[in-house]
Image (tube, rainbow, N blue to C red; front, side, top):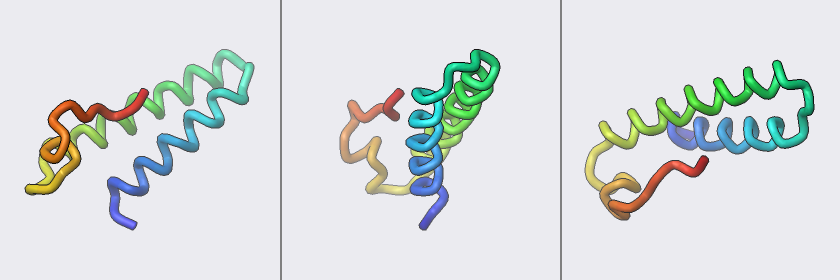
Amino acid sequence: MDERQKLQSDLKRYRTIRDLISDERVVAAIEELIRETKKRLSQIEASSPKGSMAEIRPDYRIPT
């Protein structure tokens, strides 16, 4: 599993946890993890060689 795949898995897990939590402080912390993960995924996509999802689909955006 490469870093991009791990981050995508983490992002999915964070979103699931966020949707199950009602404590506002925990939700805020999870949302910060989501922002950081999305930022890192964007960096990876921007620096990846030919064949990245952004090049295959120019309209591709990391899901929120």
